[in-house]
Amino acid sequence: QVQLQESGPGLVKPSQTLSLTCTVSGGSISSGGYYWSWIRQHPGKGLEWIGYIYYSGSTYYNPSLKSRVTISVDTSKNQFSLKLSSVTAADTAVYYCASLSGSYYYLDYWGQGTLVTVSS
Amino acid sequence: SYVLTQPPSVSVAPGQTARITCGGNNIGSKSVHWYQQKPGQAPVLVVYDDSDRPSGIPERFSGSNSGNTATLTISRVEAGDEADYYCQVWDSSSDSPVVFGGGTKLTVL
Image 1 (cartoon, helix red, strand yellow):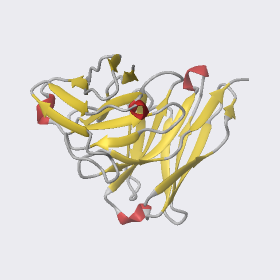
Image 2 (tube, chains in turn blue, orange):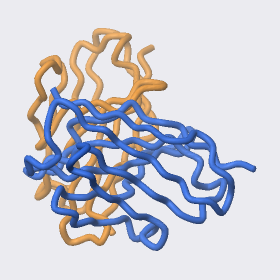
Image 3 (cartoon, helix red, strand yellow):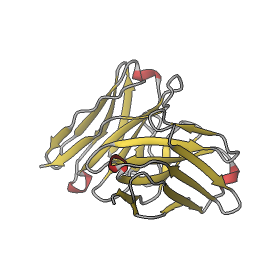
Image 4 (cartoon, one colour):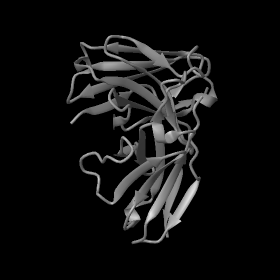
């Protein structure tokens, strides 16, 4: 059973860069077949896809965030990471990492989520 | 970009059948997935590829998809089914291919 766990600061100052890491266990990022994804959920709101990365390093980002987002992968640590630059209060949300199946493109495994608050 | 429309809320009495819809242009040509999210928890996949269930999901959860509407059906609703439900598709022609519906709050009366 694949498990994902987000880690990173829960509080980020405005204009700084939000950095989160997702550690994958029970499976290898390098095995292929999955797109390793980040999704966020603003308080009381719906789900917003941020982007994904394949183990090879190819990425795809939500156009609304593309100018500020970088997703990277470290196959040696079985981790992938999210960086979101120039954050504002509007980036306050619960951030989830998840695995996007490359067959029918559903998100089958999710991390528990981590709340990131942007505040000075 | 592709838009998925869900009703904000659906209410149903215990033991009855809940139907949650997800509307989209010719959604019947796409593969639709459904997630259940309880308060303070991560979403859980309950139906994928229109009507398949992941291991561990009760048979009470089923799905269908045709025309411009996909439907998640929950039979013999239990109090524990109260949650937010989201539909999702992959739209390969979009510049933002992972598309979520706005979510539906299922209330068990």
